Length: 103
Image (tube, rainbow, N blue to C red):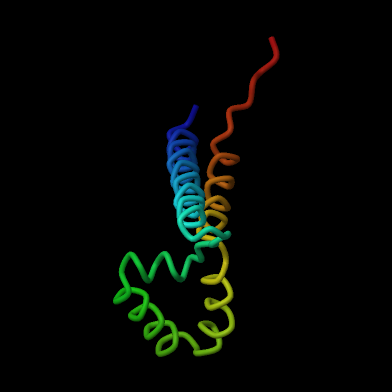
């Protein structure tokens, strides 16, 4: 088995664990609020480090194109955090999947 597959599997499992933690955080916030409270990636990022989110917006709008940020990145920032983490987790796990050889 190649080192690349091992690295992909490790990254995939770590990201899957992070996605599950995000689901748990969303569930706890919902229980506290008494109603479903989805945690968007934008809210999560803002809570984690608002300055870096603002810097990313400025960089994208200034050096790439304002249209990439709005509506592109804005749409992704509104998706649930767990989903954004789960997508690359699934990709890494698929890339690192071990194929069983028949004997």
